[in-house]
Length: 109
Image 1 (cartoon, rainbow, N blue to C red):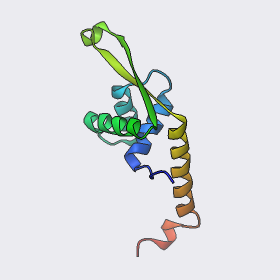
Image 2 (cartoon, rainbow, N blue to C red):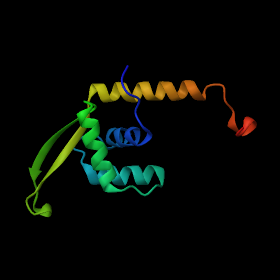
Image 3 (cartoon, rainbow, N blue to C red):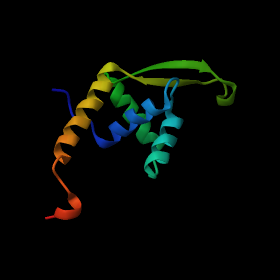
């Protein structure tokens, strides 16, 4: 069984899927902040992207150099099939844990 994805790893993968093709770090940071209302440190996203790629859940490549970045190329990412499967498994596990709970009624113990 594959390691369970952490909450932030899920957010990064989901942000990439929402953004579509040709995705790189800054829009991922912005997408997570926009959808969650949380401040997101760019360094946290870049570390997570590297970790997800090491796990085989992302693939990356260097894009063309751009004038706006002083000729530096951007590293683009996409979610792999293994990444999609990990997201599905994480969602299934959480859905299973939530099933049958009504936290408004039961509250914390």
